[in-house]
Amino acid sequence: MDQATTTTTPLLSTPWRHRLPLKTSLSSELSGAVGDLGTYIPIVLTLTLVSHLDLGTTLIFTSLYNIATGLLFDIPMPVQPMKSIAAVAVAESSSGHLTVPQIAAAGLSTSIVLLFLGSTGLMSFLYRFLPLPVVRGVQLSQGLSFAFTAIKYIRYNQDLVTSKSGTPRSLLGFDGLVVALVSLLFLILTTGAGDHHDDNQGDHENQTLRARDDDDDCRQPRSRREYTRLKFLSSIPSALIVFLVGLFLCFLRDPSVFKDLKFGPSKISVLKITWEDWKIGFVRAAIPQIPLSILNSVIAVCKLSGDLFPDREASAMKVSVSVAVMNFVGCWFGAMPVCHGAGGLAGQYRFGGRSGLSVVFLGIGKLVLGLVFGNSFGMILGQFPIGILGVLLLFAGIELAMACRDMNTKEESFVMLVCAAVSLTGSSAALGFGCGILLFLLLKLRQKVDCCGNGFLRSNKPKSSVDGETNSIIP
Image 1 (cartoon, one colour):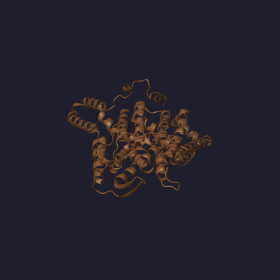
Image 2 (cartoon, rainbow, N blue to C red):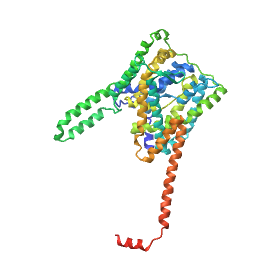
Image 3 (tube, rainbow, N blue to C red):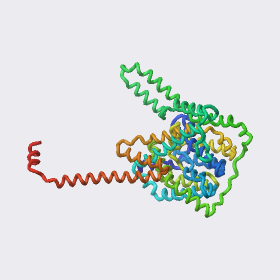
Image 4 (spheres, one colour):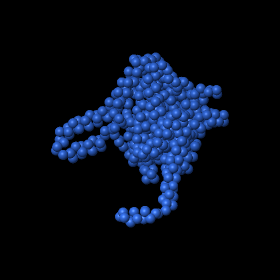
């Protein structure tokens, strides 16, 4: 673990071009860049419409976060909205929606806790000693939650302001069921189950083919053709194509968005956060966000990074501090509170992201949009087909859930499934995590009791003459 940690984040003194070697094809990195937009766009758009968050400011700051994390971690480390804060901000309550200063206060409060845990080593301690089945349960619940939400996006019309599903989606139209299903089929045909066929795999395949006996010669051409076909399909930037088609459909759905576009970045100013904003933001939004950030934004992300990139596993300390620093920079200017999410990492990996270049490309795209269109870009995103976002989110959720397939024993699977079930039904990762820890400890205690009980019975069982005779007869 310590050895992996020491090689996680390259030193800042290393030239950037050496920190971002191309791990796969350029088209795959470009496709992976948009793999997390299925969660990013709906949340950001909702905060823009309901809480009047400045989209241009958020695009600029999150673009800088993407570029920085891509250079530092050298994996497609995502930058995602803090979901609990966003959910509380747009939820109807007696005191109304959260204001932008209150949202910023919630993000800063959460970041203070993460900075403390990361800088003191407590986050690394938690990551090192937390039971793997419990972590897998959190990942499974988050992945299935994404998948369930994605199915709703695909099947039903969505009201992002109220976060509720409406009538069944019509079959035809620019945001119809046909558009979503065609996108889904295209992504399945090009990416399959998520296996990536790169050049290293090609070399291994060729060596395997050359090592076969002459009796298998009739099978070799077919295998080579199959590999070549799969490699070609994997090289297609499928997620990027689907996303660009969605942008094109935005203008077809409402051509008047051209008139509403305004060129130039948003005016950036420092927020005035009052003591009342701090109190409301912490109590209503930060308290439910803190456990989610610890579990999903740090621990689950680090574990997933180790699964996907064994030689570049992210450090819990560095991920925790990274989340804190990002929000200390951007929240004071009204940018959306962000974190690193396991679902975003799974989505970017699923569509081809294998290095920091993937999120660097995404950051450059956000920066251009933020500087050119500013807050008016929300007019375009408001027309983006929700069904296509659902398709992207579905693949991200399934990829995250599939990381849990390494639970080999019935006991591990039992703990994982109970943790996931409680998290899903209780809508709280913290509740599921607590139940998972308690269940894990009870099972371990049961094993101790069984061992002690068996040892006690064996040590106090008197030896009879029959036993002695039997032992003397049996060699």
